[in-house]
Length: 398
Image 1: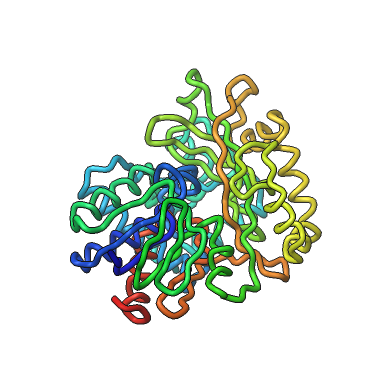
Image 2 (image 1 turned 60 degrees about the horizontal axis):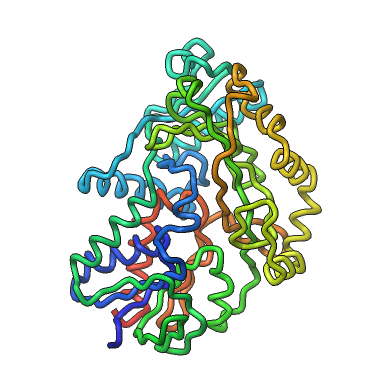
């Protein structure tokens, strides 16, 4: 059977794209190819589970537009399908006057992006929302929330298969090569008129197989989490974030209430020597050489060595990790936190060492490649899927 569209990658962006296509074109025969034995195994299922508001992103960027629109689509989808979520709001906290200045700029930026009811709070007002947070000031962002993105991804899959019995999902199915309409995988060969690549950590390698000349490369960064032990979970009610460093696409070590009631602390951001390396000792010679021999990686390291060194130190020191948390929650002690999971983020780097800090989607013939989908891609997934659908209508055989 020749499928109308093959989607490579079973993360939330791939499934949201498939869902948008299937919902709008019920007779379209889709096949989703995922190399792991479950959906949302990597970035989609190993993030902080936050519904982002659109606060941080440059006005007019794809991130800003898709986050705000996508957040609304995601919340509507969750309500319609009884997927657990909570628009609980969050605090972005400042500890000094310089951070307070950045906080005021964030408020202006958020309002430009369409956010409402943003308020800068003093220390007394903060205590009414988060009694144990002790800082100079905070920006209250009521439109942020929490959700389980793995559950969302799996619900997309359920909906796709219920709309069209001819559509299918193949797990443990790694794409080895493809040429025109022929896709070679570890479980056999498939034919599709169009291919949409949502390969996450391997987006650049999949694009190169399509003979696309790239100036960028995907470099992976591991993020480690701790969590609050049961006896002190009461100290965090919802979401508490530091003022971010504008030079990096990371939001800093933050405190997050998960939908299961856990309070996670993290993540940090350290270069990993394996693209899917979740342990400190994970190493893959091909991944390490590919990334370390790339000019952009070296320039990133040289230009930001102080930041990188601090992140590595925190990765191996519970007390240094705690120091970051104490800037927001001074009453936390070393015995209040315990090691939790780790995640890996795909960072798109240019040869100059600059981070591609926006979504990047390109097309070639009947193929579409999602080359960069950093945070808030999970929040924006349905909006990204909508954009890819329109690109497919325009450029592919839909």
